[in-house]
Amino acid sequence: MLELRPTCENCNKPLPPASTEARICSYECTFCAACVERVLLNVCPNCGGGFAPRPIRPAKNWKGNNWLGADPAGTTVKHRPVAVAAHAAFAATLRTMPPERR
Image 1: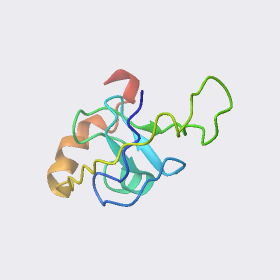
Image 2: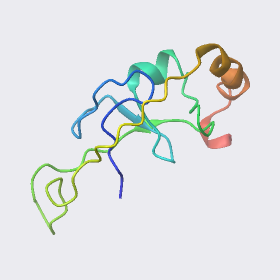
Image 3: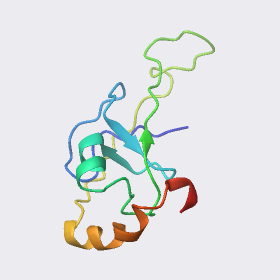
Image 4: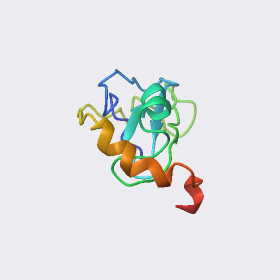
């Protein structure tokens, strides 16, 4: 089950459960869309993978008790600002390669 982390790891922007700005990698590293596009260049600084929009957990119990009330979003903030120059060097070769081929 996704943790639904509350903020962008880089800029600490709030990313509530219903945010359409949240992006995650396959390890659930969480960043805002602006940081993924402008700073990270779609390369996760923690694993080198790409990002996808984070799914939104239903706010209402539509079926089977699978909803935000039964499985609340995480509250642990992981604020780890990215060293821009170091990440640019790391991402230089990876960003030209599609995430599915990394």
